[in-house]
Structures are given as C-alpha cells and as structure tokens.
Length: 491
Image (tube, rainbow, N blue to C red; front, side):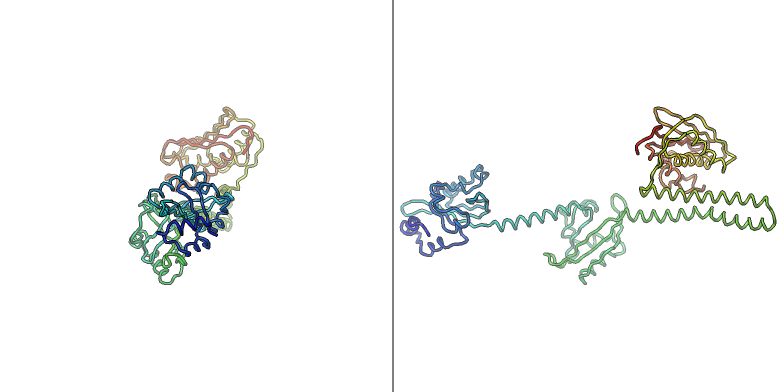
C-alpha cells in the first residue's frame, strides 16, 4: 500500500493539487503504470506495487538508493540520469524511452515520464511513471529485421523483382531491375510501366498478361522477353503473380529470371546439329554413290574400276568415322568425362606410328622428321591422335605443296613438336581462335571437317599439363606446336 508519508505529501501538504482518494487508489492498484517518487537529487522515496511487480525492487531494496541504479552502465556513462534530473528541474517534466534495469539485472525497454511536483511549503518531489514496452520494441525489431532481410535479399539476388500496383506503376523494384535498365536510380519510381516497357515488349505480350492478371487474379508463367540492354541482347523468363493478404492487395509481383545463357546454348546446339548434319551428309552421299557405281562395275566385270571405287568408298568411310570419333571425344571432354591413360613409352615410335597412319591415306605427301625425344610419359593413343590431326591439317590445307616437316626437340624436360606446312596460312585476326571448338577460318570453310580436330588437340595436350600454339602467315603456310613434360606428371 502507499506509504503514509507519501499520502501526507500528496494530500495534506499540497492542497492546491487537490489529490483525492482516486489518485491514491490509482497509485496503489495500478497494474500497468509503475510509479516511483523521488527527491530532486533522484533519491528514491516511494514505489508502488506495479513498480515492484514489474522491476522486482521492493521499498526496502531501494532505501537510500538513487534512481540511477535503474539505468544501464552505458546510459550511466552517457549521464542520462543527470540529464533527466536537469530537464525536470528546468522544464518541470521529462520523458524518455530507454532500457530499465530490473533487480535480477535483466533489461526492460520502458516508456517513462517524470513530473516535478511542488508543495505549498515549496517542498519538491519528482513523480516518475513507467510502462513496460518491451513487447512493442521486440515487435518493432522483428519487423525491422524482416524488412532489412527482405531488402537484403532483393538487393543481392540476381533475378529482377518488381512490385506493380493496379495502375501498373512500379511501387518497388530491386537493384537488378535498375541495373538492367540503364540504372536510373533505386529510389526512382516509374509512373507508367506500360510506356516504359513498350520498347522491349514489342508484341505487347507482357502488358497483355499483366492486364489479364489484374482482371482475373490468375498468375502467368514462362513468358519470354528479349531486352536490348547496354551489355547486349538478353533473354528473360517472366512470372507474374497477384498479391494476396498484403498492403497492396490489387498489386502484381513480377519475377524476371535471365535465361540468356540457356537460350544461347539452345541456339548453339541447334546450329551444331545443323552444321554436323550438313558435314556428315557429303561423305555419306559419296559412300552411297560409290556403292551404286560398284554394283554397275561388278555387273560389267570391270574389276579395275571396282577396286578404284572401293578405295574411294573406304576413304569416305574413314572421313565419316573420324568425324563421329571427334564428335564423341568432344562430347566426353565437354562433359568432364575425359580421362588419360598414362604410361611410359617411346616417343619417337609414337611419332612414326602417327606418320604411318597418315601416309597410308595420303601416299602422295612426303613427311620429313627432324629430331628425337626418346622415352616419355603420357597417353600414347591420345598423343598419336594429336600428331595425326596436326599432320592431316597440314596436308588438308597444303594448297598444292606436298611436303610436311615435323620437328621434335627436348629442352629443360619439355618435349616440343612442331608441324610445318607451306599451305594457305591463317589470317592474323583468326589465329587466336583456331583451337576453339567448331571454329573454322574463312578460307577453309569449303574444305571437309567440322572444326573439332584442333580443339581436341588442345584439350588432350592441356590434360598432359602442356600447351598448344601456332604461328602463321597468310599465303605462306603455318607451324603448329605442342609441348608436354617428358617425365610422368600429376594430372
């Protein structure tokens, strides 16, 4: 119950304030408003039951204590108790929102107001009223954290996220949106999204879907839109969903996911399929034609012509087999399933076998060899594939020259092979790309091949911890190189 001295101060000594039993009951019976009375120096005189229930301190606990004990160490260091007393002395009241320390040293966030009361005898006291607002502060903190999390997610995700109202104005958009559209500034709002997107939505499909969603409240998905951005044409997949149970119940959430790489891959795959089908058609047509001619030659008992056509058919079958093998190897390499079989072998014998393989098919060409390497470590079969490709390219693009030079050298534990031809040569602008997949120079597009041979050579040599390169002068021929370590290596 309220202390008798407090009653005397409030009722008898300050009749001008006209305190009543109502106030005394409020002081004694309040469950929400914690009250304490202190002198102007902040020394605690009285506390009500609500104060004890809220903060744990009893009247006995606070005897002779200053109200600064209710402040956190940081607030005491910032002199908040002294500032509050000074404000009350000067203005007659003070209010604050800060942590209050309970008896068990835990914190509560409170809203407080301090009022200066002066008796008829000029005796002054300070009445401080406090309310626990910890629940409210926790809710505010949770809301702020959720907002910050949403903002962080919107800022960091790559997908474009746009919130439209029912007039199709941009209410909010993330960083990805503004970055795509010339970065007008993340604080800018677009008054008319319909007019803004029109240059990109040339067929009006996006706006049509948005209007339909507004009318029917049904979502749409998988709408493709191509945008001419600063970095080049980009393709997006768009989903639009009506908002429900939000502060913008008639709005639409647009999520725009970039699929440029996927679309490019699809187009590349289609181009490759068409290209390969075209390249395979020629040798296959030749084989079919040869079979027809062989039938006629057999019917007429022309054995000489039959043998000639059989050889031509075999050559075309070899070309088909090489194309299919290159495609298979390129697919294995591209999917990461390319594994070398490393063994020690005679490098010079490997070179000889590769040359024999080529000359069986091209007996008119002379392949001259300089240098030796001796024992080496690597995948012998794959290295034969590289040497064979280098020699076949030299012959294919020889432009009438019938001599190919193959040079082998060993320096500092590195074997270097160079294949020189005196053929067409390669323009300087195209030389950096000749080892890329499916690349063919302008001057060789009419010649057979699908542009995988040198790509496979590069990947095989790189798997041996080596490197490939070329030197060429247009019209004067080319030199193709590869180098690998002599000794066994760790792949």
